[in-house]
Length: 359
Image (tube, rainbow, N blue to C red; front, side, top):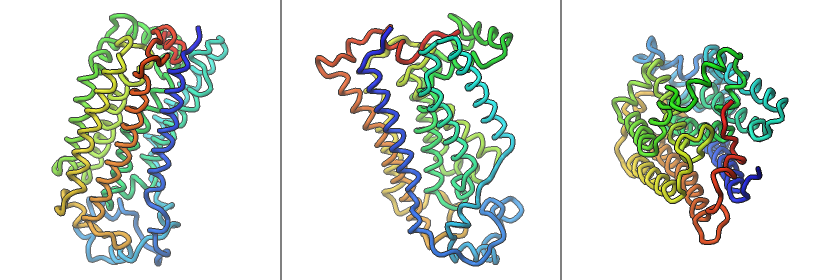
């Protein structure tokens, strides 16, 4: 079977968009904003804002050190490695690589493509960057940094992982007895398949994604997540999982739970998602009121006011989210143009591009 040119061109364009979004996020805080390194300071932001020191953070010598500005060298030292999360990421990577190698050995080109491996590993690396890098450490001090982290967890990592067609590849990475059990759960009318079918229905996936986005940005929920590490982890997990559910109908990897989803419906799906993202971002950025009092009670880095930090965070959500949505809408509109070969692509030809049948 041969893949349709329209489908694969669209996938390459989506990958390019993901790379552009990542590049924009990583350059959101240019080194020009970071002053010369100050004198040595004793604690990282999370240590300074831990339960034992949060009430006394202001007015201490540590707060003064933060107020003098943080240098690039200090910023790069704020990596927060978490062994339990590292173990999970390493396990997911090992399972996928094992399955990919087995499929390559079986000459299953549709499942063992090199680009799938590259996309999956890139997704895991960006996920690790979002959770371990200074982004995670500085979320206690800067709302705008927190927004970059959220965009990575919802808009960048999920599409990369889904474009890697993870289900069949990871099934082949499991030990044979477990693979057979999981295969039965994902088979027609299997329990896991039925649950995934329900959660990835476009209206359901959109609603879960939207409720999660708006719910965790409510001041009460947001403040709880900042002050409680467990709730912060729950917040990140919710963003990531609902991000996977949201992008599943758009990318439609194996198993193809809903068959071929019409491009017109996909376009409407993305347009409505872009609208709600724009509204939330506008509420955050077009205001003179601080939504989250937490940031009024922490040391300010680089003389950046709390309201300017919030406005920047809203702009990051607005620009990066809109960029992703708009390009996807553009690709769908091109697909819908009269005479475009992608419109006439059959489900079989699309299967050759994404690799659909589970082992």
